[in-house]
Image 1: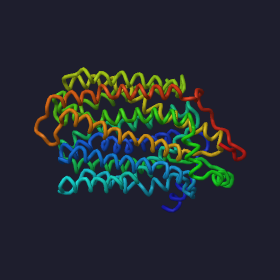
Image 2 (image 1 turned 180 degrees about the vertical axis):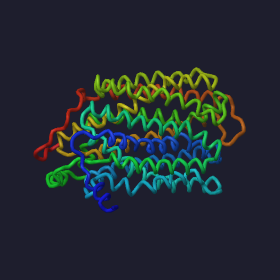
Image 3 (image 1 turned 90 degrees about the vertical axis):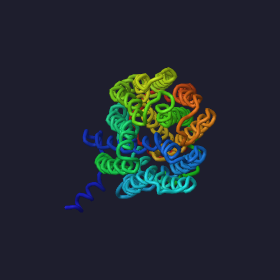
Image 4 (image 1 turned 120 degrees about the vertical axis):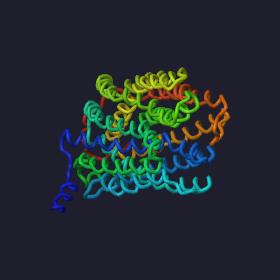
Length: 455
């Protein structure tokens, strides 16, 4: 019984539009991807600096190394995935091989042995390196299937809705739910629980990970004419991609800074407890869930470019509200407005990147989803570096002392600016980038290219 089932999974190919079951199952992959990523992004600095007493500068250096490794892996894995064709397809082998190391490494991040700060940094670097390799292999390849499964802007906007709803639930549990877990059962159990849940969802999502049939001989001929160096050059010379990815980098940096600063904001600016981080983060995601559907309509109505501009305005202005509150309740209300912008980011950015990939295919005759998602990851992972540098710089400038029972009043002001001042400046830069994004029309179903074309 098992062999025919394995063969059916291996030999599946998608013709026409995906079924509802495939759409939902594929969308489920966003839940563990966001659950792991957001928990790591939001709390790893806080855990190692405030709870374990590692100097903030050391953690910043480790996070920079993490960001650089992750960034370099993305285009290399993406290019290899595009060109590595097997009976299982291009993407599924990477996902299958990477899932178990991914969830195991994530759990170990929160289970450090009793070491001095220097030893903890070494532990962090080794475990996170494994986490990085596995995360890129799994999540990049799952994401690269999106433009292939869904083929038009309208189809993508609709198909992206369940995916982003799953992603939002993952973000809720990863950022708003994690404080409840580590506050009640400890950091190590939190990491283990989230790892097991993630593994289950990744297994389910394989049902929807189906590639489309291609003419292998024709595709291999085209691929042979374009080496890795040329692929990188064509990708980073693409004006649509460059304007898109720079704007995306600025927005992802904004989100990374916001999430990492929330625990500090709760404790030192609005005077809450660790568990109150949930009260700040939950409203963001509660507002984002219905807003996902609204932004899907906007994307279908006006196209990716105009939708991106609208998202930036909403998100940037909403983050300014964090300059006002002095209580946890007031900050929670500000989060409702921020949630509208977060929903827009989740809905429109990958639809726009899929449009860039379609445009590239008309010029190269190749579907290079892996390369584009990898190149996007290469640039956007810089948000981890931006987050680490900005957070460490602001904390140091405001007089923050690691592990101290109390902090000077300037720390509260510095953290407030992290949430309410820095994001709007980054959003303004993203607006400029998206203004120059050249693709104005929605994506049609790509027509097959009959012969290799020079990019």
